[in-house]
Image (cartoon, rainbow, N blue to C red; front, side):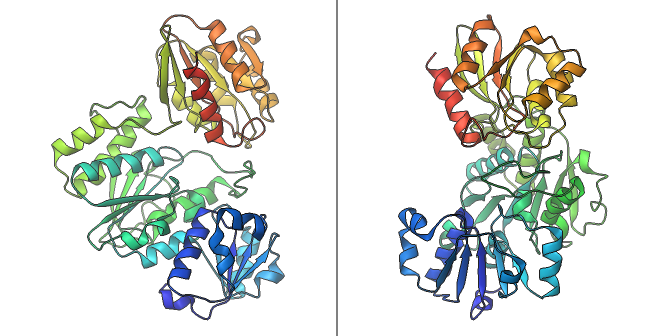
Length: 439
């Protein structure tokens, strides 16, 4: 898509999250004044408080609703926020009407001043891997930009990008599902069941099946050509679509380079980042230095503090059973696990076995996943005397301190969504960090 393709189009923006808003500002700067209708659950007045520029844009119409198919038929281009769910039926109907559904990320790929773009996706590890690549390239004296799902909309910095620069994009399955092109280098860290129910009120989008989820992830590599490079976890080698990719495929396993990151999964993340760095010809000594100095991301098995020979780890980003299993496998010391929260339609049977085998004590948050967790634990004969139910983070940490002894680890790795007791995973993580540092 060229910028001129948006002139005289009738455009709908579904949702006004950070990506769509950054795009809206970009279009305004480029004097693209095509009629735009925004469908949002937030009123224009409330959004104008945080985004005063909205007052200046007379070409915008505002609707506080979820759009119906009849409403959407009036538009020629629909720019969908990653959080907006479009069912397969709706997508089919729009395609039949020759209405193009596109994402802000696709428009960024089309308009980005450089083609030196590295896309990173995966169920877990994509944020860490993206940040590792960013750190290595900076160590190698490259001018590099980092954006996407990591929290920075790339349209916020598009005007600063030069042709010789590098751009790293952390991409979720929701950002990828409307893609029609792929970056020059694509990395898939891993895959496990995730986003299969609309569990998060702040991000109600979901995939109707694991196959649909994988196909969205595969869009990162699907449109590459023979000059592009696909970097893929070797565990995904037999996944549908991998063998038919047109790009050069490189499969990674683990790295033995020294780092501050704990767990086997982070050895895989490092291996993926190193593979990218070698393709870009970053010298070995600079790769080693960058990895050695990398401290990790907040809420991803983050070491918060050690008090009275007890170490506290914040893994609030672990919102699936597989992520918490990975966290449990990262330690050999006795673990007091804080878990639970809102149900995302997960199967807790494998997690229950790991909890029985690897934890000294379990504290579960009261939430919609509680009964399912308790049922799974009962099936593996977990000792209920080693379990407490907490109604708050403060209560959970108090229980954990009571049963902890010298050299124990208190690990908050929920395996569930956060809403109910918390605003989001960041709020949950912030509360854990704040309270443990007060001890």
